[in-house]
Image (cartoon, rainbow, N blue to C red; front, side):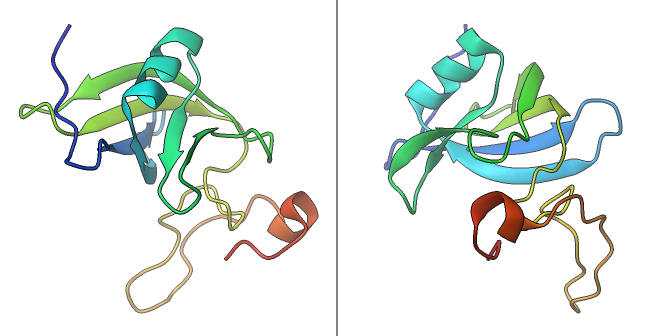
Length: 123
């Protein structure tokens, strides 16, 4: 087992990639407990910096991430979760959080209406 290097605030960045298409779906942070839960349950868990709590991806939306593989970078301070994504990864309803260009052009696929899922807009 590698010794992961968490930042001073106890977090490690996690890039999430579709295991089949190789599309980057999202980027989030995990603490030690979230990484452990991901390893033991097989479903992606993260740490919300805004809500200051652990969360399981899909617990509200039903759009879960089954983790196929966890990769660690050479410095052991960043992870990639290769996942099988149910529905959309983005809380705004898009399949990927990377659904637009820097100029604002929408390039991604909208999968669900966040108002219907969360009762509010996705932003």
